[in-house]
Image 1 (spheres, rainbow, N blue to C red):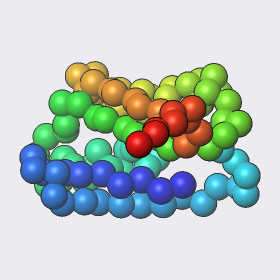
Image 2: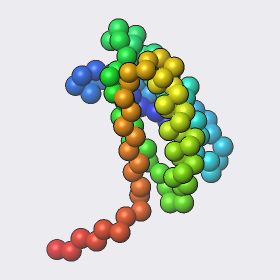
Image 3: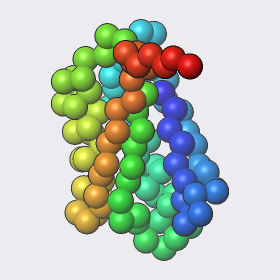
Length: 103
C-alpha cells in the first residue's frame, strides 16, 4: 500500500511512504501511514491540517463495507490521535464504470 500526501498550500510538495500488505489483500489498516504523514505535515507547517482528503482507488470486488469498518475507522482513529479538529473527506474511486461515450 502506498500513501502520497501534499504538505503545502499550492499542493506542489509531496511526501510518500509505503507499507507491505499480503498479496490479494484489498483492505488494510493505514493508521501508521496516516500518523506519519500528519507528523511530517506538522514538522513542516508547525500545525496539523484542518482537513484531510483521501482518494482511495478500489478494484472490482472490493468489499466497501469492510473498507469502511477497517480503513476509514483506522484513518479516523489516526486523525483523532493527533487532533480532534481534523475533518476527513474519503472518496472511493472505482475502476469499473458503466459510462459509454459516442461521437
